[in-house]
Image (tube, rainbow, N blue to C red; front, side, top):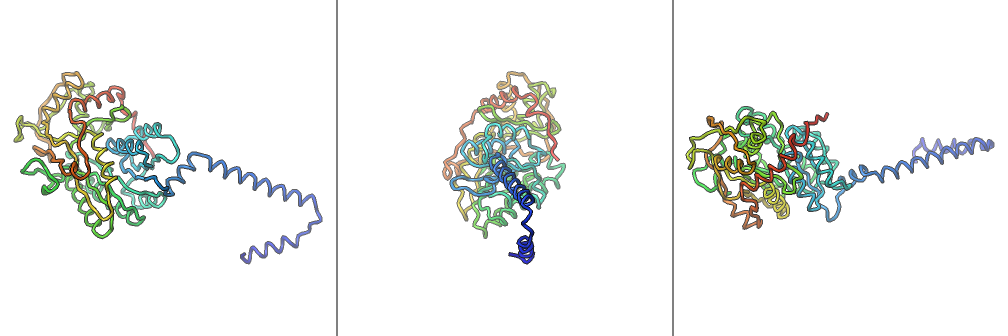
Length: 409
């Protein structure tokens, strides 16, 4: 007991107990204070928010807690959905610069139980915020999706891409190291290969990225690989190709912000043209060294892509690094894509042919044999038209996406 405490106790013993009424009033006040305090504690413990915070901050046997960065985005939200379906505990961190709060709300509606899903609004470029998130949560693994990801935009704003992709990945790694989080599943890209002379692309294909997006991703990969050499981390790097499709059950979809339509995926532009939001589809580049002059890409369905991430997480091992291409192994030209989109939407979309987009490459498709051999993964949704039909169904049911962008302070 402190000196102050002893003094207070002595004074208490020296009090005049003759006044019985005063003693009763004091006792009653103490009792009521204790009673109300107990009620407050019981109420807090029974509230879902209290339980959720507690369960996220304390590890639980048999439950894997995964941090999904960029989990409000197109791919990240689909990954969070799959993890939640598979009984993982999920924390989404997103600054909503490209993601949709509506996607998070959809997930919260599907998994409202305490301790399943939490959303944290934060910017991964804020080192203090990132460290606080790791300090307050007991993560078992990180799936790092968060990134700006438009090739054309990267040529116009290269510094933004190096900050957002490379620097932010470094901050995530530093937080993982500081808080002993040992498993990382990194979302990389085929853009790190650049324009290889030989197809298909294998994991041994040399990496010579030709745009800031690909360069920033390769730098982030190099940082991860260097750090992993002395950290006993379990690392999986997934280099995936062009993502299309949406959740087959229609719970999530792709909803880029209106101001990003010019930079977005061809599937989004196709649907916008089919819905009359834009007058037609713009095809950039018809003079590439391909069969029909347009770019050839390997289109991977988002459901397959997410499955690869989950398999990577299940197979991640301490001190080991796995690098895998995630694709179908089949290339389709942009012209072929447009024809599939016309059939999927039932709309004869007007097509305008323009000059090449800066930083694009002629032909890219994968050799996915390594991921099949080591992780037993192979693409299931390989019909281009069917994947687009699934995405189109969601688009028709959600004409304004997840709703107006929500600003969070």
